Image (cartoon, rainbow, N blue to C red; front, side, top):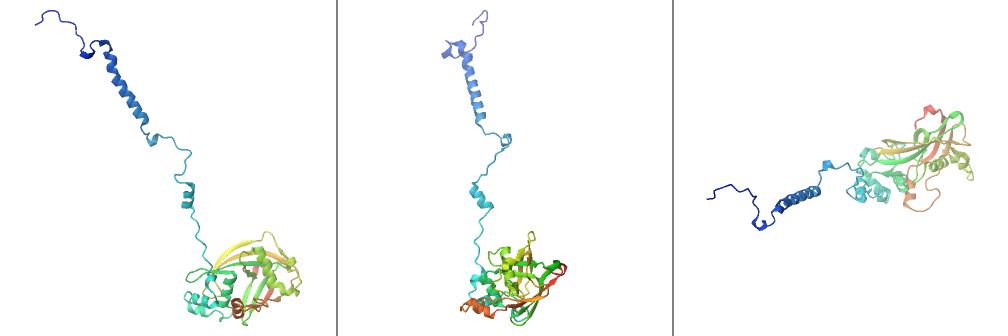
Length: 298
């Protein structure tokens, strides 16, 4: 047993390193520094919270522009062939219409005074003047040019009535109107319509009727009307009406009558069109009169 003064306290050190006791403090701090460095590296490399990100001022789509265009603006489906391509002759059109129209209405075509027949409609389809929607009932769509021919004292020329090839009379009381041809502009349709329906009044094949016509600028308008067809009972119609005002020099100031050239003219060709034209109901004469602008309907 040791008796005497208690020796001073000496810190315990590793026996293997007891020859370097003054470096023990530095050695013991190294693990702490290493852990701190690893912690900082981990925090720096870890993903930041989404809420801490600044707003992205230049955002780009996650899909390619081509794919986005396809998704937002799909290509239009191929344009279906016009129904006129399905009907080789008026009989095939008649068979197609028979199951899609009321029987009593369809039976009145070409029989009821003032109506047209299936040969007329087939010719309209063949010429591209009319299209039919494949529905029940079908909807007939027509582009029509309407010309308000302005005469003396601001009066408007109207077609009072028509005399048809079957001897019937069809009341009209409306400005000069004509179905437009495919890809025809309103201006082109105006000149053609006036030549066809008023040209006979000038009694000269050499007369340049186009020089007599003046379309008034700023008068063009377009509207769409949907109503039942008077020419084809039971057949709904959609009319795109293109209207203009015009003047025609040399027209009579009193009521007058004009004759329209028959479909196909003097052609002797034996074709489905000429045979159909021979059976169609056509306009033989137009009866015109000048009226006050307030008394007409467009």
